[in-house]
Structures are given as structure tokens and as C-alpha cells.
Image (cartoon, helix red, strand yellow):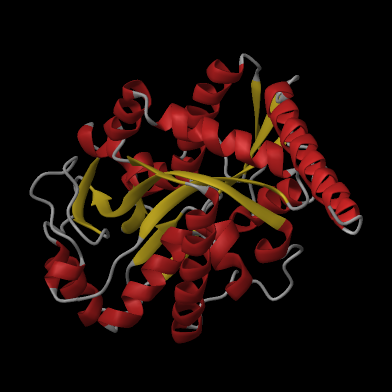
Length: 330
């Protein structure tokens, strides 16, 4: 045997050893995490769709981890305050960010001075659910159908006001997108969240709202709100007989709220993989699926890479819509 083969063997042995050590370190980090409470930053107030979904997934993960998940609601500026707080937290895996379109894929296109870059500062971990939006009016509204609402708005430019759960939110941009498609005008009245907007809608202080079904469904089923349409690509089984906006003369119009967990960039890969796997495990549980369905949301698990691809595509779509509508954060 030639002596020149020995250095090659040494190199191969060293490479194998390094790989084994890396795998061992990965497994060790996964086994150790989490060893203390984990914070989940929710970028909207308590009581709304984002808060509900975050607490549902956080509670499921806490049971699996046998460690508390501490919920921190940091609302404001269309979810960008809380999202920025999470993005700039230490990348140690102990601060999770509840990611939604408003703070991740819409904000970069409507805020002239955003304090973070979602594509750089946030690490997609796992998506876990989606839900459509609903077009709702007070139960005593004169508008009995979506067509009646549109016809009145077209004949009376600017006379109707619409509520949103925040300037720069998904409902805000979805409404502005629809108004541009239908060529009608309404006055925007932004709130800090659905929990603040919906009571004013019921009281008649605003006339219509496009809101996430998770927030609005209890009031629809409780007889406080009338639903005129859903914004999903297909109808939802939670509201039988309610047609989509797209099917009523606006082909291609579809908007859904997605929910995902993100970490600050730089978080160790072992922790990312651990959370990713744990989200997959808890979303397979029938209890969580039933809990979310009761509020109109559908569990949809997305691993980190597909979530990142979805986020990129969603961001590109909202960039086009923001430019077309001229929508800006107020």
C-alpha cells in the first residue's frame, strides 16, 4: 500500500468524526430545548384572530415541551411593533414570533421606514393554519346581500365607512384591494384590533368590515353580525351557503390569513428543526384541529422551507397590490 494513501485516510476519518460530532451536537441541542419558559410575541391585542391562533398553538407546544409558553401581546402599527420586537430578540430560541401577513409580507410595501427586514431578520420555522376573511355588516344593516352593499357604495361614493383591525393589516389591504377592483370608495376607520373594531361595527359607528373569520365568527353565530361573503378562493364549510367574493363577479380575488411561527435570524439550526418537528406533531392532534375549526380556521402544517417559499410569493403579491391601490400605513 502506498504511503500517500494514509493522509487521505486521515482526512476521511477526520471528516467522518466531524460529521458525527455535528450530529451529536444537533441531537443534544434538540434534546435540551426548551429547558426554560419560551416567550411567544403576539403582534395584536388580546381577543382577536391572531391572539386566538397564537394561544392555541402555544398551549399545545407548552404541553408537549412541559415548559410554559408565555404570551406577550405587543400591538400597534399594523403588527409591526410586535414583529420588530420579536425579530430583534436574542436568537436563542426562547422568543418566538407569531407571524401573519401584516407584519411579514405586507408591512415592507406600505411602511416607508420599517425598523426590520422580514426577509433578513426573521427565520421561518413552521406554518400551522389558515383562515379566510369575511365581509360583515351589523345584523340590523339595510344591506341584505353583497350586491346591495356594492350597489349602494357605487351610487354614494365615500358615504360608507369601513372598519379594519389596524392600518396596514391584512383586512385593511384586502378591503382596499376590493375597493379598487369594484371601483368604489369608502372611508377607512382603523382600530388597534378586531376586539376594538367589532363593537363599533355592531353599534353602527361603521357600516362594514372585512375581518378574519376567527374574530368575527362568534358574533355571526351569536346573531350580532350578518355575513355577506367570504374572501377565500373557495367557500368555507363553517358558513354554509355563503359565496366567495370571487364568485360574485371578481375573478381571482382571494385573501386568506395564514399563521406561522418565526424566530430571530441567527437562531441555531438545531432549535429551528426541533420547533419545526414539534409543530408538525401538535398540528396532527385532533383536539387542536377541532379547536381551530370551531373558529373557522383550518390546520395546515408547513415546514420551514415551504413556509419560506410561501412567504416570498405572498410578499410579491402584496407588493403588486399595494402599488396598484396606493395603500399606505396611516
